[in-house]
Image (cartoon, rainbow, N blue to C red; front, top):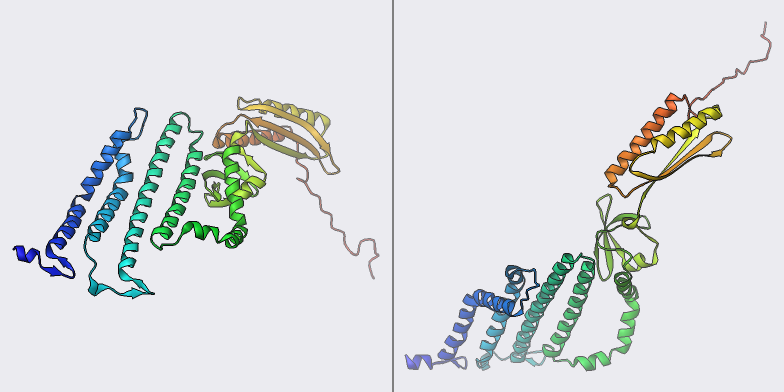
Amino acid sequence: MHSLLDEVILDNTVRQYIICFGTILLVLIIKRYLSHFIAWLAFRLMRRTSWTLSQKEFSDLMVGPLGNFLFAFITIAALDKLNYPSDLTFDIFHVPSRIIFARIGRGIIIVFFTWLLLRSIDFVALLLEHKANTIGGAHSQLIVFFKDFFKAILVIIGLLLLVQFSLHKDVSAALGGVGIATAAIALAARESLENLIASFIIFFDKPFHIGDLVKINAVTGTIEKIGLRSTRIRTDQKTYVTVPNKQMVDSITDNLTLRTQRRVDLDLHISLGTTANQLQQLTDGIQKITDRPQIENKTILLNDITPNAYIVHTEYYTSLIPVQEFNEVKQRVALEVIKLMEALEVEAAGVSTEIRLKSENAGKPESQ
């Protein structure tokens, strides 16, 4: 048995293979339990009494990437203890296979570690969102923005680490030697940089928040997400519109959520055959019709006299009631105004039209 364990296969003894792959198999079996335990221990060490998140929410975020990182790290560390077989040595573009596999291993560790850090950022953001919602939720959109921002920075750092440790390229020297290329890229990405700067302006100036109803150019809808490059709006037709942040900053944005009243304009074009007494009764009647609890301010007057009609202008403002109730008030007022016009026998301009037909033979004597 001793001689069997000391048997050398591909520059390694059987004992070394058993230890190496046995360790990998053991980690594969217990990695989920091990990652659950580490997550539980980390949660207990970091937990504060003010946290509203449960341990399950923390575990759901961290267990998967933590288990994969542990498995990748221990697997590569175990394989590193083996002697690289000389029979499997070959070159790819003058790079020995042993170095290639070592660099791939480092790259795998960096990828899984970056994934673990990204999940950590998600957890911190989730924790801050819960806290923001508890105290009013005014800064929740800022938390989402900076979560995406820091994740983007972390991904860039991960890529630089891959270049440094997997490709063995000096990142500092590379960054210092690409001044012209960087300027060209910055020029090409000018619009993206403008949108990024605009996103900071949005979050610090706060012209609107997530959930606000806004009108930007020809788009009217509810803000659903504010990102690094664009803002997503759910329109009143239930479509999903993406608007660049630069356009959100440069254009005139009407935040409908911040209005204090809803306005209704009603113009009546009255026939010129209407008497002054009828017009007075009509305006007085509209005054009474608009005496409603929902209507806070109103203006009713004979606004203009044109060659074709008298124009009675009605303008009133309701309180900030739900849209459905607002439409119901608007409809009731309009219907009652129509009934009032019928009761006063007031006709709208252009209702009656008289057409006269003139014969071509009119005025000519009849032929004998």
